Image: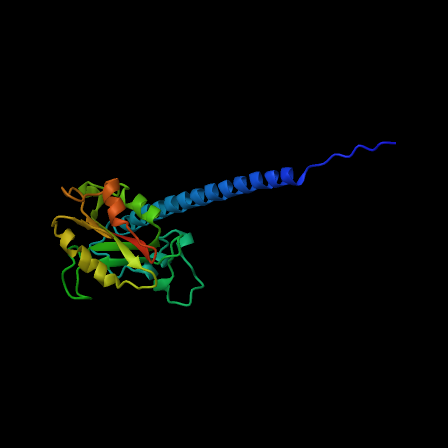
Length: 228
């Protein structure tokens, strides 16, 4: 009796494994890109929701009073997924975006003038830290409102060293000049955009966003918005 045996050679098996490996790498790369896009879109939606909720809640008020992270959490003005209740911090620090960076909300003066605690607080600032470059560029090139009805005073895009903590009052000082309608400015790793400005307006061009969102390997991007 003759018994016919068939099977795959070692070379054939290696070929199959190589094909599987290539497909796996492609699948992982595609998944990573899709997740990055999802996170970026999520952040854009969260910022838009926060702006709308805060302006709606305070529409009949003359001031944003003591608006801060604690207030927006207590009043439900931020998406629930931003709130991290188990952090060993007070409520003011319990906001994190989908990239793991801090989120800051605070009352501000319209022009940034006045001593701390003595400002009129008729504007507010939202800041998102720890962003990837892709997310930063998407935010910089998004239309946050060019007309006066949008309430947007200025947007600040900048690079932040990993592990550093930004003093929220310094954001107000940085946006002080643009709130007084001086021309916007842009450098590598930083940009201040003003609605209607001739040089750097909202939304930024792709080239301007690419320059402003230049975040080296040891840095992350951050974006702040100032609204009245």
